[in-house]
Image (tube, rainbow, N blue to C red; front, top):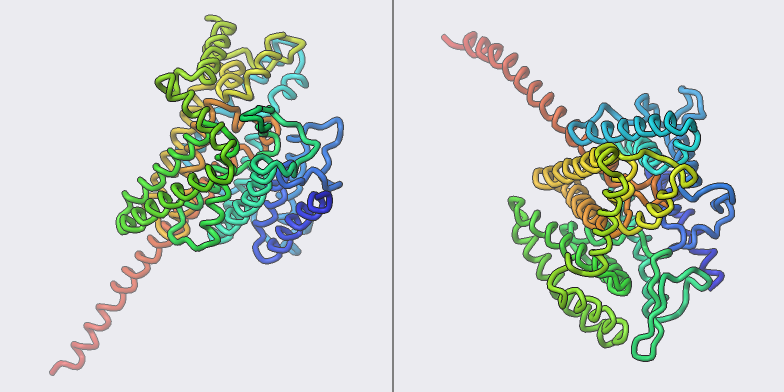
Amino acid sequence: MNTVRLVLPTALLLYFLWRSRRQRVFLLGLPFLMNMYFSVFFDRLRPFWVPSAWQPADHMMLWLVVTWIVYFDLVLPWRRRTVRERRVFGPRLSAPEEVVLVGFMAYALFKVGTTAVHHMDLGTAIGEARIPLYMFAGYLLLRGILCHAARKETVDLLAAVVVVNSVAAGLYVLHQGLHLYIYAGMVEYQYIVVNGEILTRSFYFMPQYLPLAVGLCVARRKWNLFWVGVFAVNLAAIWLSYTRALIGVVVVEIAVILAMRLLKQGDVWRAVKRGLQIAVILVVFVGTAFVLLPTQSAYLMSRLTETTSQGSARTDSNLEYRFIWWRTTIEWLGGENRLSGVGFPSSAQDVRVTDIAVMAPDIMWVPVLWSMGLLGVAGLAGLFAVILWRAASLSLTSGGDAALLSTALTGWILAVVLLGLREWVIYDPWHTPLALSFFALLTAETQRQRTEARQRTVVVSDDRVAIVGVRPESFRQEEGRSP
């Protein structure tokens, strides 16, 4: 197993570097692998050990910058560059979604400034605001690369990320379901004794892209045995996470993607067929799970029964204390700071910051409310709303790879929004440089479709000019032949 822990991340890194020779966007495989860290043992590779004085997000941000520099050959003179792109952050802003993002980040910077003035400490304010700052900086770098990349390359990259996530899901199933202890030595979240058997609940090395994997599988127009296997192994990882919210979110994600495909003209039969395929797979999967993993499945069912016995998910105790934390934060802000928040003080400057750090992993909206108030919450909610609107509209009006990409992103974004009620998703300090990767992918697809629309307009205009210029000449020729 020690050999696997070293060989697997090395093989994955070499694979992405090899693919980048023909498809340059595969250089992004490096930050994506870093985002998966423990699930694929990427932390074991010596060049990617996190320095003791750094946070994982600092290290990931550094390597994302390096990837961006290498992608655009920025260390080379202009005449020697393979990619001669002047707009290294991508084309102009896409309204309205990117305008909302810029407004949100401008407000975050304003709160950094007010915090620094209030406490007379700019460095601490910037350090405490690293999460939104890294989110935006990472988004800009991803935007530049993905807007330059072709759609086919982007779809291939996402498919590769999903396959790697499936490898991690398989290892997770072996560890958590079959007790092979693949991740021996790692911190377990919880130990539970069920029917005399010790079960573990683990999130620290859980596959990072389960909603993306499910979304991409369901959005595909054609399936083969390989993609059925990818779908099944990611379902198994979700099942063995024993996470009721994640299971519910994935069910909603599948239903929404199938509904969107039903709304597309000419895709109704394929959507119905895919729905039937998923239903058959789910029936077989659940039956197999209860046969091969009876204790694990019984424990999961007990957790689901606990939720239904309380009437609804809203009255579930786990969700209830998240609402309590929201109300507690509202009370701490009081009338004076409720609208704008307290900014980004450190725990030494405000002792309540320690409690906010305890709450944040279980609900994304608490740190947003604390630092930027109801204005920040409204800004982030508005951002998610316009992103979902853009993704859904692209999905319903496009075809081929464009429809696949936008539909999968719609499911992924929806999952992030829903999971934000029970975890910190984009505010996870370990993964902030890639926190808005779904948004960067969507922006790039929006720009591609706008470029294609302009090109079609130019072609139609050229055709009209050609027709106007040719017809009179042909008439004159015909008149010359007439008696």
